[in-house]
Structure formats: structure tokens, C-alpha cells
Image (cartoon, rainbow, N blue to C red; front, side, top):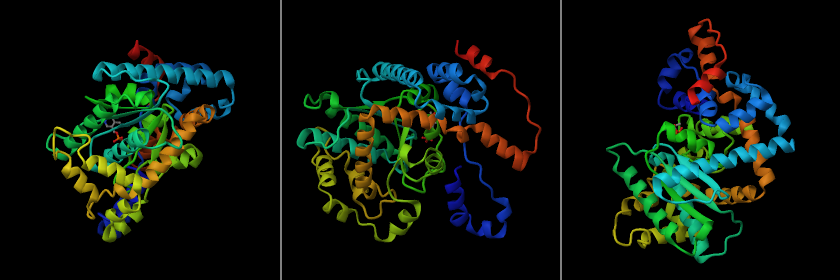
Length: 390
Ligand SMILES: *Cc1c(COP(=O)(O)O)cnc(C)c1O
């Protein structure tokens, strides 16, 4: 798990144990394997990186730091954009196969894929999408960039509310994707049957990685790392490994929003979502659309439990508390994407600075601190990857 969550466990759940045996506690922040999550998942980028940097980065991810020197190399930047564009096309094909919806690949691919869970706040994402839709329908958007929002993930068999969230995404998608007023400006996809194989195509074709859990609830996340490795930019809360990702890329290359973990804890006793609604006409508009049955005209009441959860003073996920900050940060995302030079720079720097998030680093830390084994020399892993994908 990430450093933040280790600290929260020492201060909270395992406080007594920590006071007795502090030496038994140590942190190893997760990583992902560069072989699968770049080598296999993104052959286009793998080839480009091998051309420019050789192939040592596959077993020594820190070497991607050398990309820092290429951010102003026009030939390299053009190749980067071309690779990313082809990966978006590959993702668009997957979306079309699974949903029948054709999406435009010049739109911002805004993606949230992970288990469906209240703490991961797919609902906050949906509130933002409804807000964008309301802007198109009834307002005049300030900054606009065309978006294709993709949400995917499994719900546990017994988790009824998670299944209702999937139903809501599908219903909102149906309305938006069939409204002629919307056109190319916005599309919403629920991508069924999320899996590791699907993730290989998804994370390499994503522009914006959604990591929007209630601060303090996500132990680390690894999806966040897969996206970063492949050049997606993150919009996220200060939660799990997002904290360390932000530290690695710097605030110019990360869209941070929302309450911090200690603020969430502090607010619990006096959380007042109704006051937030009263003070925010745009939030009011989104909730009015939901409550009026706009997205469930022929299925009355099916989203009542979701809506009352959002409006409850006991909502542990404090979704409405982060709405304003999320919407404003998403406007910054749109402005950044409209400046394609800036966006591409952010994309390259995210890959360049993801060395720490290799699971090779995690395993080396285990070995140095705990196992004390002699590492085995590996041969050309690149040849193995080549065999595996061809
Ligand atoms: C990476 C991955 C996850 C974990 O995603 P998080 O965003 O870290 O929760 C879950 N499922 C699949 C299929 C994945 O590939």
C-alpha cells in the first residue's frame, strides 16, 4: 500500500499495536510491472522508447527519466502524438465492438476503470458528466473540450448499490448519446467486462486518468500507475499512491482537487450536504435532473437510494463536498487539453517520471529490508516480451 495509508493504519486501526511494536511496521508502496503494462500493453510506445533510449528501461524504469531531454525534440514529440493517437483508435475500436458506439478520437478520452465501489466515487464522475450535459443543454460553457468519458468495472455479486451505479451510468449514457443537441461534444460509455486484458488497451489509449476516491480510503491504487506509465495525465484526490504520483510529476503535471484525508475525518461530525446544494446552483441543477427522473423516465424511483445517499449528512464518501472543486479542476483539464503542446508535454513528463512506480522497485525494497535474497540476473527481457506479443 501507499505511504499515506500506512500512516493512517498506524494512527487509526492499528494504533495500539503500533505503540507496542513500532518496529513491526514498514511501508512498501506498490508498483506495476513495466513488462506487461508498457512492453506488452503498448507496443507502439515500446518501439518508440526502444528506438530513442535502447531497451534497458524495461528492467530499469528509472531510465525513462531520459525522456525529459526529449520534450522539446519536435521529431520525438510528433512520434509521441502519433503513437498515442493510434492507441486511442485501438481503444475506440474496443468501445465500438463492445457497445456499438463510435467515438471521435480527437476528443479527450476521460477514463475511470476500476472495481465499482462507493469509495471510488464513480458517482462523482457521473455528477460531473451530468453537469457537462446541462451546460450543453441549458447553459453556455466557459471552457470546452470535446470529451469521451469511459467508465468500466465490475461490481461484486452481492453489492446491489454498485450495480445501481452501473445502471445509472448506462441510463445517463443512453440519454446523452441519443440527444442530437449534444453532437460530438460529449459521449459517455459504460464499457462492460472490464479485465486485465481490456486494461492493456484502455490504459494506453487514455488521456485523462480518473483517480477520485474519497481521501483516506484508497490503500494505494495501481490503475493510477498503469495510466501514468503510458502517458495519461491524472485528475485525482490526495489519496493512496496519488500522493506519490503528484510528488513525482509536480503540480504542473497533475490535476489535484478535493478534501484531504484529515479534512474528511474532521468534517464527519458536521457535514452538511444540503448547505452545499443551497450554495451551488450548478450542483442544484444536476441533482434536480437526477431527482426529476430525467435519466429514468420509465423506471421510477430506481436511483432514489443513490440520491438520498449523496444528500445524507452521514455520507461517508462526502461526494458532494468535492463537487465544486472537481468541476473547477475539470475546467482546468479542458483548458490544458485545448493547448495540445502543453498537454503532450504533460503526457511525456508523466511517463518520464514514473520510474518509482515499477514493481521492480517495490520488490527491491522488500529484498533490502526483509528477504535479503541474492537477486537473480535476468537476460534480455526484451526478447521475451517480443516473443510474447508476436
Ligand atoms: C489495475 C487493475 C485494477 C486496479 O485498479 P485501481 O484503479 O487501482 O483500483 C483492477 N482491475 C483490473 C482489471 C486492473 O487491471
